[in-house]
Length: 102
Image 1 (cartoon, rainbow, N blue to C red):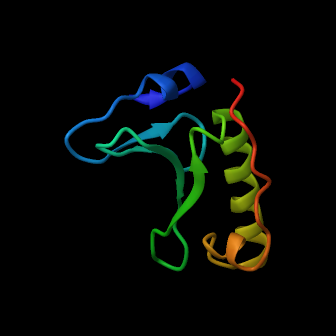
Image 2: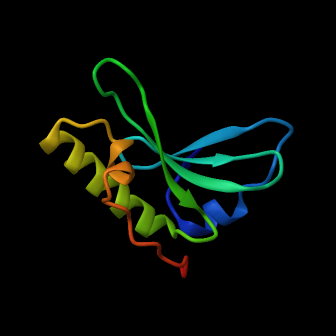
């Protein structure tokens, strides 16, 4: 199953183990769902032969639309600078936290 709409993110429920659902047309953005029911947006891409995971934030704070936009910005920044996408937040380019309204 791939995620296309906010309502699909909202409907994801907990299972006995952590699971991930790919976001459609997002170049590696996923929704990670924990057994506790907590959900986060995480981006995964290849950088220097590794597959680093970059956490965008929880689905309580980030909407699907905003998480897609943020992941796109992080990917572009990583490509232009050559830095690991996880460094985006570390070097002070912190994302603007957005309330999920979708």
